[in-house]
Image 1: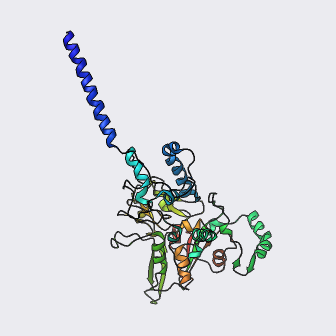
Image 2: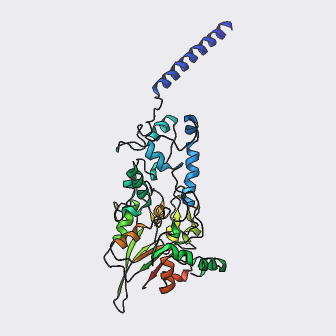
Length: 152
Length: 247
């Protein structure tokens, strides 16, 4: 009886050790994400990185409905502006590539999003943003950006 | 237009402010300040405005498709998969009177109805009319059932069949959702006009006028009051935002 209990105990210990080593190995294989640095100075989403990681989608969702239904197109919490600042400079990097800012974390956290089935995953400078080349200055975004750039 | 009646207090306000308005204009038709641009960027659209379009078919040139190509360019619509799958937001329609042989050419797109059948039938509520009268698809909640496409009497909506890449940042669009003319809402929200209207003016055809049909001083309202504008399928009582002259 005593012998079998001892045996069970050692089996448990060995199993525990195996599980621990295995999980450490798994941890060692997962690369902690290092998202690319943003190009802007100030993030539109408030709080520290932890808050941003945990809540960025709530800000985006709220803004999404405001833009869609109420026509509020300010830069704050706009996905377009997130991408303009964090999006890859490399034109070949799209969402799904671990080098993409959004993918880097979503892959790590096993998060599946479908934003980029419709939305642009590459930054688009304002001059590309006006499609009608007939009268570029009539497109207010273009005019605004051009004015800002000429001030610089 | 019966639903766009202006109440008396608004009318008197407009009459009183006519002198102020005259002071703001430097020459007839040229204004220092446009009423449509008045909405601050951080405020929601209101039903004080109703966007509309007036198309003079006598000025619309047969064979010209400047409006169609401008729309495709503005909204990033690519023609890849043939006529059965490609998105069509605006198309040129040719009407031929069989008796007289007279040919009329006109652009046809979402008519931005006041009572849109596409909104009535949508099971998820993604097809909606904005306060300012623009009818849109909220693709975030569209399930791609295409019921709205069947309900639309103008064949204005398209279904995106294939994966879309390299979208315009301001015009997101993707597979499995329905889409149609948005009056270039991204431009309108910034005080601009739709790409088709701009393209038509650039071609010196000037067949399309865009503006606020609730503002009696807008170019479109004045023209509508003077010469009128027909609705296509007016028998359906949809009170369309897009009106036609010469048909």
